[in-house]
Structure formats: structure tokens, C-alpha cells
Length: 352
Image 1 (cartoon, rainbow, N blue to C red):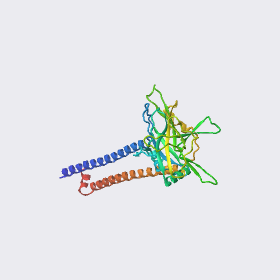
Image 2: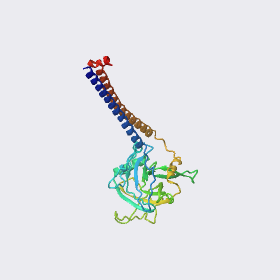
Image 3: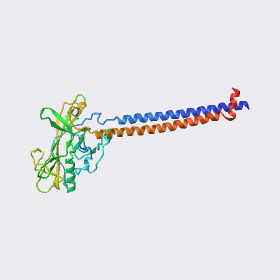
Image 4: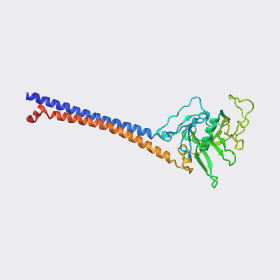
């Protein structure tokens, strides 16, 4: 019987050791899974769009997307299509990363058509007839100094500004104003809408290194123009008297007021310029422009709070999962050890 007891004890020991090894392997596997998830998540969080250059052939469509409306005055962003502007039949959201989400970006498709190296003038986007409520919405956004932000090839739009003291040096600001307000003392304030946009897109070519052309600059110049046309409006073949393919829009044309309900015709120009700036340096205009915008402390604090909250949530979930597994493993191990040291199993101390 003693030999049987010894055999049973040895067998129990082996089973106990195997169970401990299995628990340890499970814990190690769980840690490896968490490490892999952290690696993948970290790689996703640090992904930056537009890190790989994209080449466009002559005449190829260069998609333009619309982004949010921002204001230094209110610090509250809005979606571009929250305004009654020209919209595509189907609005498609562009994939966003974590940085764009924290920045409050809302990138969507647009009706604007741009083709590489193809200059176009006085292209009609759409004609809108606005009601009183829509006019008041435009007036509200214009009075709050809201700016429009668009994107081409992951490059934000910029407006060119000049310093009075140094007029030969170019400076750039991100986005462009939605409109302007003319304040009067004895008369009612007048609001004017920028309904014509001139795109100036700069591209870089280097046949010895790559085929096609790369977008290295995206400039916009807003105009306020009260468009006119003869006869009835033909949406399929609109013809304006204020501008055409040979007659460009100038700042001297009558402005487009947005004070009373009525129609507004949205148009745009597209011009392409060759540039010696390489693709890797296309962001330098923003870094060197010395733009003196107010720091958005609210946005910075909000982003930091969100990051801290998400980090705490992930850490808490990981700690709860690991503590639960470790506690379960320790409890089972203590129970097995206690069971081995009680009852008839104590006979192994007399044998060995």
C-alpha cells in the first residue's frame, strides 16, 4: 500500500505542476496579446496621413475635400455642410485618424472638380436661392469670423497675405474667411459673401526621380461677386455675363451681399503653377509664415484631457484584467498546496 501511496503522490505532484505550468502559460500568453494590441494601437495612433507622396498624371482628377469651419472668436467648430452651400448628392466622410478626431476635423467630399495642369475659369458650381433663416445663418457665421478649410492631397488650403512693411515677402494663413462685414454707424451692417474662389495649385515635377507631378501648394483667393446672366437660368448650360472662360473675375466687380433673401451663384477658377519646392518641403510655408494666431488654449486643454482620459481607461482595463487573472491563479495555487499538505498525503514525509 505504501508504494501505491507513493505512486499516487508522485502522480498528483505531476498533475499539480502541469496545472501550474498551464496557468503560467495562459498568463504569459495574455501579456503577449496585450503587448501586441498596444503595439498595433500605438502604430495606429502615430499614423500621419500624407506621409507618402502621390503623383498625378496630366488631366488626372485631383480630389478636393472640405473640412470644418473654425473661429478664433468663438472657438466652436462647425461642419462645412452645416451651411446651406453647394453639396454633392451623396456626402462621403473621409477616413480620419486619432489626430483629426481630437482636432475636431470633419473631412468630406465636395463638388469641386480639379484636374492636373488644366486651367479653368468661371466654372459654375451651383445656384442657390436662400431664405431668411439661411441668410441669418450666414450673417451669424460671418460676424463670428468663421474661416473655411479645404484639403487637397492632405495639404490644407492657405490664403496669401502680405506685410505692409515687407511687401515682397509672402506670408500664408490657413483657411480663408467665409465673408466680410461692413459696419456702419448710422446704417445697418452689411454682410458680403465670398461666393467665388480662385484656386492656385502649385505642383513639382522631377522626371529623373518620379513620373507625373506632385502637389506642393494649395492657395485660395476669395472673391465676392454678384453674378449676372441673361434670360432664364439654364442649370445644364449656365452662361454668366460677369465672367466666362476668357473674362476673369476681378475685385472691382459688384460684391455679393447676403442681407436679404435671394439667389447666390457659386463659381470658382483653377490655375496651376510649376514650383521648385520639393514634396518634402511643402509644409514649410506654414512653419515659416510666422502666423500670429491666438493660441487655442481651450482646444489644447480639451485635447489633453481626452488623451489623459483614454489613457486612464486603457490602463484601468488592463490592470483589472491582469489582476483578475493573477488573483485567480494565486487562489488556485494556494488551494492546491493546502490540499496537498492535509490528510493522508502527509505520509510522504515519513517515506522520503
